[in-house]
Every structure is written in structure tokens, then in C-alpha cells.
Length: 347
Ligand code: SF4
Image (tube, rainbow, N blue to C red; front, side, top):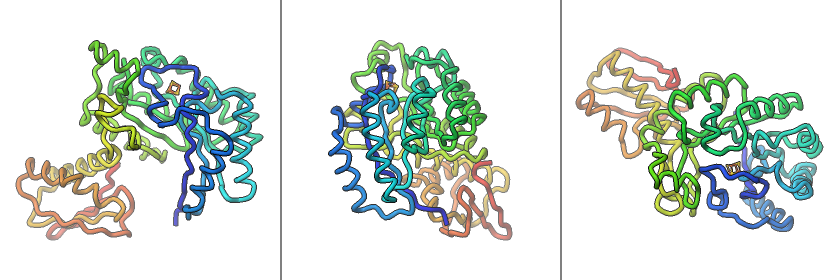
């Protein structure tokens, strides 16, 4: 059985980043504006540990750009994390940063403190998208950072964003293909959102930027998810997590935000698979759809949207969803009168 993994997130906010990407207001995203004292970090970790019961526990420094922090601050944070790791109370350390904040010196330090995984905010592999988004680095910086990470034997993740200024479905999926060639250990995919007090907010007011609609974001990110999955690259997050601060109309003023964006993407993929089945085999009195319990809700979709859409296209349908843990993830088994078909949702 797969080991369960618990994450202790430590948000370092905008600290460490001297950049101002057009879409970013890290202070809003993380809800943290001040430097967390070392005492606060320890208390934070202890609070999490009190209730965590996982096979593996990871400390994760998220937000901002960890390796751009003042060197002493980096060391202090990493010392705490390593202390917990050395005594076996946590098992791994991960952090996120920018590609151009990776260097030999940086990686020597991370090795010393036994960091396991470095996630890189790459966003796009297209120079014009990076430039228009004011990322402050080009695609070469991504390749350089990743070859260094590989040379130092770090696990690494890639974060991509769809819908930045200058981006398109074609360009985004090309970025996905570039990322796949680099064989990251994990991927996060976010749709570009317009957050208050960012340059993107000003651009969208002035009609220089149009946020992508939610249904388009879901469809395109679903294609990306499929590509990573068939290439055995785990997608560990789809869309931003809902926090008290992040909600449409609060800090996010436009863009394809949905509190369950990942579930929408997965439901879209299951809809596609069911639709392909119905195109190929038609439908009979009742279809039994067997699916792994963890993915049963993706078959009907949120608010039964998949059923509603399928009925609109194929006429009235009778489905019965059966949760069955012997069915592999991303698979549905459809039983109709005399036939049984096993369908890989990702193919
Ligand atoms: S590099 Fe990251 S933290 Fe810095 S401005 Fe851009 S998105 Fe925000």
C-alpha cells in the first residue's frame, strides 16, 4: 500500500523574492506578511505534529523564493527542519524557489541541510510569456537550474501556470511537453488568476489582459494532466487551495478560480471517457460504472453535471455508479447488458 504523506507547510510569503511577477501578490496568497520567528516556526511544527498520523511527514517551505532569503535566515529555517528530521519526527524537507535562484552555492547549502525536494516556479517555457509576465528570467534559466539540481541529485518539481499574458493553449501545452522531457518528480498546475493589487489586475482593467474563462482553464489543464499522467509524472496539485483569504470577490478579482478546481478537471476527464464510450458503443437500458472509491465523485461530476451534460447529448441515460477498490485509479469499468469494457480515462 502507498505510504501516507503529511505536509507541514511553512509559508515564507514574499520574503526572499526581489521580483514582482505581474500575477503575484504573495502577501495575499499566503496570508503572511511578517517574517516568522524561529520560535514561531517550532511552535507551528509542534502544533501540526500533535495531530498528524502519517507514514511520512514533510516540512515544506512554500511561497516566495526560499533560496533568495537572507543566507542566515535560510540557515536558521533549515537548521530547525533538519533538527526535526535528525530525530525522526519528520522525514523529508522540501522548498520552492525560482529557477534563477539556483546555483552551485545554493545547492551546496541545501545538500548540507539534507533538503530532499526543490520545486521550481517555472510557469512557462516560452520566453515571450515569461517576459510579458515579468518573471525576470528566461527559459534558459529553467534548463540551467534543472541540470544543476540533477547534477546534485535533488528531487525536483515544476510548477506551471496556464493563461499568463501572451500564453495560449498551444504554448501552454508546449510548456507541458518541455516539462515532461525534463522528467520532474512532481508537477503543480495553476490557472492564472487576477489577484488584487497586482499588475495583472491593472492590465485586466485596461483591457490589456483577459483572464481565461473557467471552462477553458479546466479543459486545457485536463489535457496537461493527461499528458503528465501517461508519462508517469505525478501532478500533486491542480489550482490554488481555498483559504480564508482566497475567494472570488475577496482577493481574487477575476480569472478561473474555483474552490474545487482539481475536482472539476478530474470530472472533465471522466466525462470525456464516458462520452467516448457512448459514441463508440451507444447506450442500453442501464450502465453500471465501476470506479475506484476515491474517484467515484468524478464520474457524476459536481452537482451531477456529467450526467446532465451526457443526457443532453445522448438522451436519457440510466447509470449506476459502483465504488470498487479493485478498479485501478483513472479507470472505469462499464457493464451494460452483455458487455464489459475497461476504460483508461487517461488514454
Ligand atoms: S518569483 Fe514567485 S514570489 Fe517572486 S514575484 Fe514571482 S511569483 Fe511572486
